[in-house]
Image (cartoon, rainbow, N blue to C red; front, side, top):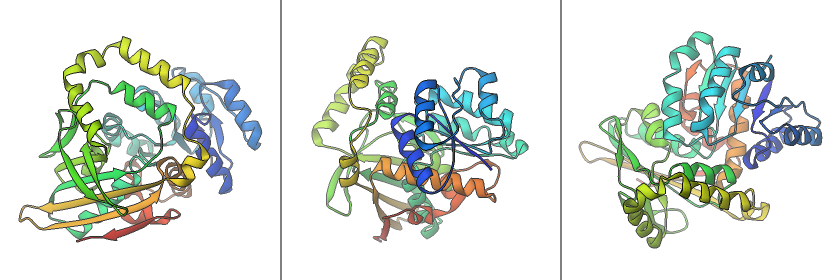
Length: 349
């Protein structure tokens, strides 16, 4: 049984490789930068199989004999098609760390093909969306009649290059919610609310987080809004951006932003990762007005991503996870998040 980590030489990929090795795994490392992949593999005494995603022959060679692929090369809306195609051709289960709504929906449409091939498709095994998805499933178990779900998160460090580039690809695009079972666009910063996290109450603003897709697949709840903690100034800026959307969508603006990102550090420092915590809150309600709510606390997003992704890969490698498209809570249950180090969950109502 073998695991291949693609995008291993990226910021988050390196954290995942370190976690995998720490837990006794010997993954094969891959990615499009041959020199960087080989250097990283040599550091850990691992096998390197560099390959470019848009070269099917190279990808087939890289995936030869591989049981599970953990895909870490984003932005995922640019890379998911080539990698899922390679996994389907080679009979390898697919995991990734995306938080992109469009990616979840695309992978979900591959459910029948994955079942026919006998492989698991499990996107979102990082901070996007393990804690929020598990909390959604927990709330739904407490209130099976729920028709509305709100989820919010707080805490984190500055973004990695990969995260920042994904955000840039979304500049000028609307937000998204799920309404009556359908994903629909809404204006940027469409709604705000104040959330009681563990440390304090925080202002949160609606964003198109991955749970707009995944929580519906996990719970069937037809109305979903997701939020991120924010400052009042950021909310105002997001609302002003509605008027600048055509400009923000131009390649000139996005190209300028990408150049700025590439000059910045690859991601948060080790000290920043160690001192930061992430928090998640959720509330579900039904047509009668009954509500349940809960909150989670966990390590910061990049640390949690490495922990969750490696444990998800271990579970799929061990067997017993169904074939087809799954969300984290569908694959491992609502308490999967509590199996990770230094996490806690508290029911509020």
